[in-house]
Image 1 (tube, rainbow, N blue to C red):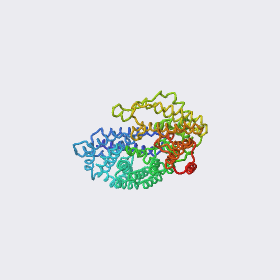
Image 2 (cartoon, helix red, strand yellow):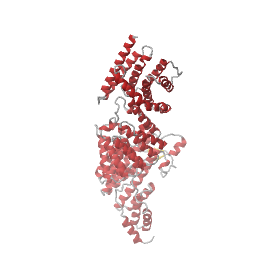
Image 3 (cartoon, rainbow, N blue to C red):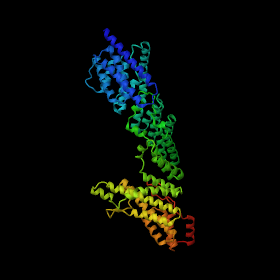
Image 4 (cartoon, rainbow, N blue to C red):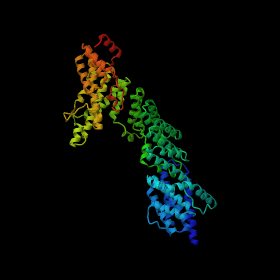
Length: 618
């Protein structure tokens, strides 16, 4: 008995020394992640070694409090290293040993049954608070492994934990002060663990049940009043906003996102979700402002560091592993945001800002020391497309020389790789025949051909802007000559079918193909008109109208050429049809360079109306 008491005191002292050292070092802010991991592994190893000593002799009630305390400390260290399976196995074995001491046999190894039986067996004893501490860790393991059903099934016990933990662990602290050498020290206050798990559970459950409406919203709002790190409180506001967005209450959602940012300025996901809401509301100016701020924040080092360190030993991020939550918290890379910002600026008539964003993006992609570029490139469009988008923006900003330089880069990198022809099959016929997808070679060949053709188209626009009509005709012709290399296996294939009826990716490419045909023919026809080659102009403008019926410039210039050819009645009829069809604004549905940029010579609507008045009634 004397030897047993001596061992108990020795092991308690060893536990307390380890726990005190762990607490002391954990309180020191160590920026080196590798050093932190080394310390956690050492603590875990030391506590586990002590536990093996204690469990090397048969379990006994006199040593149970010490054993449960060392199990708690060991499992905390396991959890800190994301060793959840090891922690759960140890917790299950401990519950079984505890029931062995009490003489109970639940007849199953199911953790829920074991813990309920264990709690019942120690009710009213000195071990109750230690079992509650271990139950907290089991709760954390379930949460970390996204086993929300187990947490929900154990809700009654979890509620008991929340209600009784304060009084039980206050008694524990008082007892510890009286007999500090005889009471095993815990590396983490269980009350803080309960508070952390409570709000983390609310966050994860909220992310999984966003579509359930007001009930989830009430739970999240209650969780926002919990004592917790600011980052976690911000997440409750973020999820409340997402819940309201699902309920089609965008303005209320924006208020929640604003609260999230006010609570934690590093909650960039709230800013990103705000930008998405502004996009849905078609508030382009607010969306652009949100994207600009988001990009600036993503460039700050603090946004890439862990935002939650309330308990350094157990980071809240350990318990926030839900896929639904990860999706809500995900934010595009800084480069992807910069690309979105550039595109939005160009589309919404803030061309000079868009140009600067595109140039910054291209400079960042070419910079060898740009942090995170290689990881972000995969989420961006291919480089030739980015060059073409930037070129279109430069053209709209009336910087034709810079636009042509970018187009030369695209042509230089793709021209030698172009096939002699591209053979495509009707997507509907291909599905009926069961022939599968378009071959990768044909698809890549089409994409490269479209890039090169678009580069020639933009260069034609540049020469048109410079009023060098001969060069404009040359480059528009080069574009057309490339586009006619695309052939169709099925002679009944119609290019006028809506894009929505085609395979998604190939459908967009075919729409771009038709747009490029229509725009290049229109550009060449307008250039011919400027040098009085009216027959050629009329032919190209008529072909442009067939390839791209929505093209407004081609129809107006078609009427102008008819007027010059003294076919004034036909010209008047053509113009009458175009008055109600203004040149469409730019859209994100297709690449910018495949849309009407209004960069060439324009016809004055007032002059056209005056001509019609002079002509008289048609």
